[in-house]
Image (cartoon, rainbow over all chains, first blue to last red):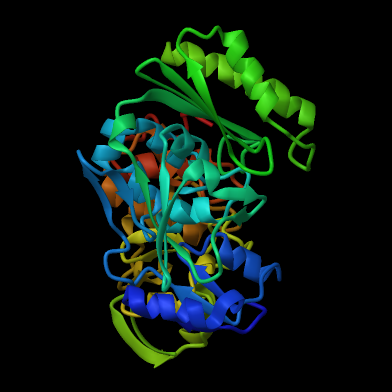
Length: 271
Length: 163
């Protein structure tokens, strides 16, 4: 690391929240660290304090209940979700998304909530969680609030979180358990790469939902579609929603084209 | 920060610089230089070590995060002058050329075999997807893993065309 910072590893929520409240913008949360340490090393962020939240009691929880659905804690890693029997049973789409993230070593560290809270337009967990109606549980010293995931992202690496807040859990409602659907991620190589585009499609009780990553400043959710809609209508809705750009990974036109290809293929799978 | 960490069966208690990575701590403080520094960004896997039994990139972990943890590095593989079975299989199958990726590869394979003693070729590829090798190609490495897991014989050695 080029820059000096202090490190703290609180063990209680109260201690964590008071550190965040006291340090404001100068503090950064360290969960898996797979984005933060890269950003610090490149000078993109220069925190005065790094707060490791993995030692906070029950932050590694990953539980499922009929009434609450799936609860993912702040220290739950991508591999925890990937290997969880209940996830594979009720929300196999999430295991699909998880497997596409980076490499095995990084998945052992990277957290699901970190992937969401970092708010990269290409966050691989986002399309699946959006389709499954995930909700974001936000907490701070001031109290708690809940935001639907589709309203959580506000721009490239921007969210509704204030500096003193953390995502205390992501919940996936029991109502979307058993949704059919999967995730397609376009990469330049078969191994470890960021998404050129990522598309998830689900179908449950006649409702079709499409989640798209790397196609706009934030991950997108397209709702209000049904099993009766022809593929052309679903593609048209996706085209209407996306705002892709050309960048070092590929052109805007290629993104538009591949999103259409993936939407059509995934629709065929769920129908 | 004062910390205590178990590395390769030895307990180290010492002051650690709070912004140092686990990789720098292992190499510069404990002088365990078998773990290599490749990209420093979690891309290449050369610095793979085991943290509480899970393969991680040591460049993506702060040393301070290892407080109270158990770390295993490549130095724990060979014992009493004998190569470990994974290292011996790498040697037997010519899975090493320059050697820079090897320490990390061996650690990834160690974790893979703990969970999955007879991995398929697809599972081996997934297990080492975070480790880049720029010399030998991956075929010999995959063969070494098949060998150490008892899935290759002298007759089939070198005859695999997977990659």
